Length: 490
Image (tube, rainbow, N blue to C red; front, side, top):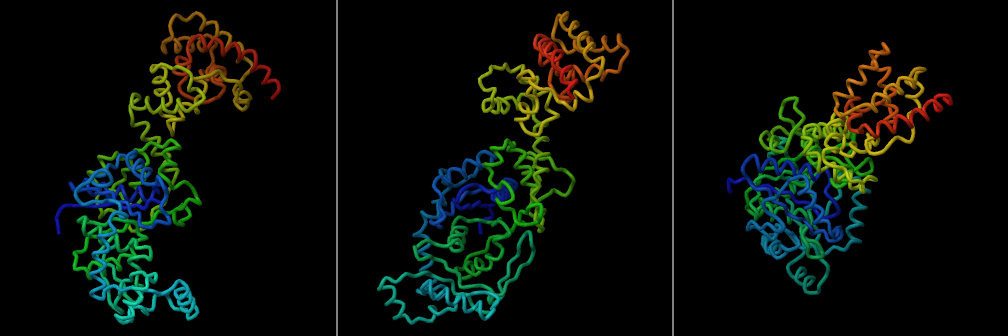
């Protein structure tokens, strides 16, 4: 076998990229890059009933968004194409003919009705597993030829030998064994002439020189069928690694019923690609320390399949949110600016013209207080418009008998300001506090309430500087007219 590491991500184009699919793609990508290998994208589109128009483009767009660039695949021929299974039918046929000739596979002409009756009878007998009874394997050559010539619908089945042990070593799970009495005579070629996943998968992995098959745990029970095929064809086995299941918090298998599962959904909700990739990487892998913040280059440097866990990984949205905030804070203000502008363009403030300095000042003030980039807008709308209401809980708690008088003093001082420097805002606030011999909060709370309408936010000096002298004056005058009336009503 070629010593080069070659791995593949082989999704079916049935809709969107599932986060479980993203995890599989990511681990394949990391393993390839860590070992100077190739990451291949192959589209397994042989199930024509489930094929969704436009799904391939969506899959590729999602992979590009999270920076998982494939080395070979659609529009990137590495000499092992085509990379769409629907374009490889003649290849599968060539190899299936060899298996049929050697009696390692056989034609089956059984009708759906017979198969249904067989299954029901086996269930009545309470057999542990419904299996095909090999009826067509025992047809004579003449019977087979006659049925083929008459054009009867047919499939091709794998001829599984009874009571054999099929064994393989899995990088994640160790040594694995199955008894063939529990393995059905799997269909390899369907009645429409298209291969099943199992057949196309084995043929393609061999011909594309795949060195490591890294996929989800749900494929573990299919692997003995693949091992039998490799052995029948005289091909060397790739190395296998079956990744743990992704679970909901209640330990059920991750599904759309309990929340978003598509990468597109997380993108649309405003998650950073770096945070999503970081989070997904930790669903089953860790380096062996407590580190949880990773960028893609660091993951490539540290990733190994030996550090992948067997146990199912719980998809915890709270942790994803925490990581998203962390990745925002790790970016420079300048890196966040274009992302911020994208969100503004989708908001109610899209038609307003804000200069970069204004937006950068908001980023600087709010960076420690946001989870999503859109929070630079929706967690601090007071930067874009004057408050139309005042938080009643804060009015009740923080508006004291002397608040109006203190605000009037502050208003007069602001009118005398020569600059909009943060230092001058600080000086004014401290002078009033000292003059009135009060605690700093006694002044700051009504000031913050007057200019923002709420009781929390960035530091007072930053808040006032960003809003600016003229706007602060307008807002305080409005607040002096409205808040005392509100206080009386509460």
